[in-house]
Image (tube, helix red, strand yellow):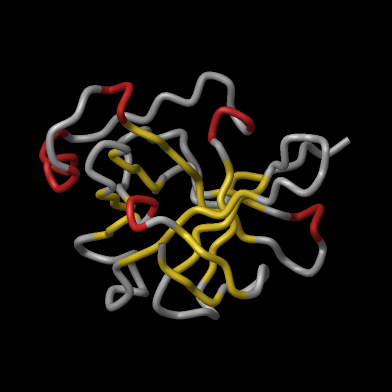
Length: 146
């Protein structure tokens, strides 16, 4: 077990195998390589957001969303070469998340369909990968306008 300080949940203990390693970091945060996913399970309902929390920098936590809760038919087209950094895997070994941007007006929250976080759950290696789908937006509205 390892104790880490988190941005929103105070100090928590995580198992070493829950640490996700980004060989190349996340663009813009290249020097931070190790993260864990924190699921806020306090409420009864399955929460929309989880947190990608850096294990070495308390202030660095990204809200993430399961892409299938945003787009039922989410099917990213990824160049095989980009997936090599994740190690060997079967498709069912991959977990995919979208980074969310939550502004002051929460109704204007967006997710990045163009560059999902892809995690090999067997190796715990991860990468943010730009997909080839031309219709996937960097700032896809999370909530539909009425």
